[in-house]
Image (cartoon, rainbow, N blue to C red; front, side, top):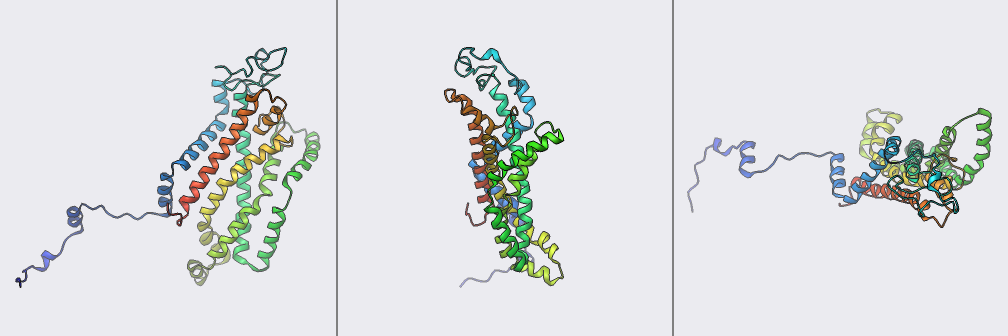
Length: 333
């Protein structure tokens, strides 16, 4: 048996600094939920690529006049010198050159590059604002229905069913005739009234989807301990709704919004394709596709606006999927 070591009490004490230096360890830092989500998102290269494309498209839409002044021509300018007078199609089949990066339209010779760039402004503007309107209405209605329950939940849930079953496309087409009369009576120039109408139709009649998601999440959150603690301290309904429950709904709201934006891009393109969206000569991707159907022998006319829609929708979907995985603590990524 070995003799016990004679060690004084002071020698048994060690400062945290000395332990850290001896072990070479780093101080442990706490991370918020936002930091954890950002670490998850940074590891998803596909989602970051989608986010980069989204940022690029937004910059293109914001700086469209500057980009067109550098690399293109005015979007509504006719360039008859680029059109074959016998066939009325672009010279060389497409008219693609250093001066016309995407070629020109048949018959009138308008610059396709400029029109695709300007079309991004209309599509993204309508999609973002319509999504914002849907998210605002859906979040408020869903959180109220889920928290209060009872007859309030029943009325709002039935209202959701009505809006989910509402034929939005038919309703938008029916409004075109009424809108034409208002434009004539009010002598409205430009596309402002029609843009506002599309934002209202697309956004107001699509809030039912997000309202159902928020309602389901609220039904779960209202039974949590922190909500019971707020009630026991005398907090009223509005405070609990917007101070306790709403912050815990940010993740599903952001995820659904990123997935709803590409749907609204397609919706706006479909309305323009059917002739009930933004009217010519204003450039929109859906309107360009509608005009291109008459010239199926000139594939570039349909290719570039179609690819613009495809890339935009794909980028938002990839980013939305990555954001969902980053914000979901059960994803395991």
